[in-house]
Image (cartoon, rainbow, N blue to C red; front, side):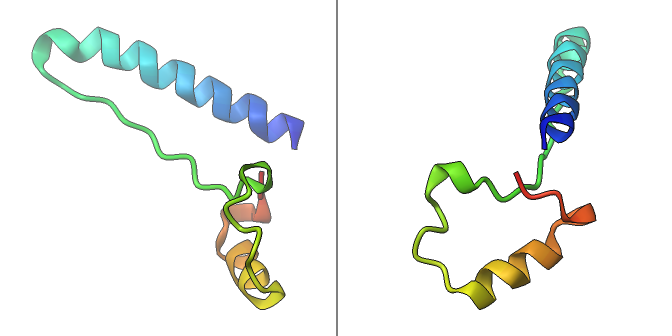
Amino acid sequence: MAKNGRVLGKVALITGASGGQYLPWGVRVNSVHPAQASETGMATNATPAWRAANQQAIPMARAA
């Protein structure tokens, strides 16, 4: 999981740098980081079946 966090951090840095580079041309740069972050408590009341279905939907099964 730590490796995944480092990768997401690098993607965020590249996104920010690209946004600054292309801002003068009016280009917006966004990135999406699909994950299921258990530390947020968003899925606290989720059923085991719901959690399993969402785990399968995450690419490479890399839940945060």
